[in-house]
Image (cartoon, rainbow, N blue to C red):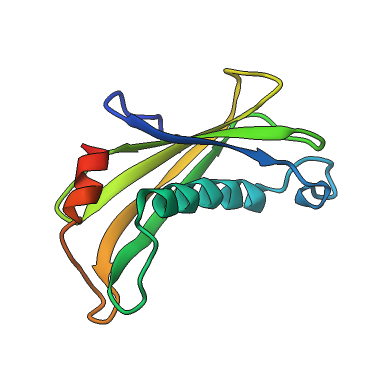
Length: 139
């Protein structure tokens, strides 16, 4: 199954992630689990920079699904340019979409993925409306 980026997505953050030697597997390319780590790194970095670090005693983000489309093999050495997009804000959720490309091959997408994030009250373990500051960033 392939998930394409929605047309109404909004670019919210970019960052460079170095490919580490240990990210590769016995086949000589970045292991599939590491792609999910790259998606997590940019998603968490964006949330922290936006002021949305999780508060275990209050509210914060929970990922309810995640996906990745493996298009080309990433290999060491190199750097990944990760681009983070948001779309589909709802009452308590929004979608993130991320593209991964090599910095030495701009515009060539090696992988795309994302997740649905739900804002929850951690103590009650229930969804709550997105904070207004976050809704303003996503809309």
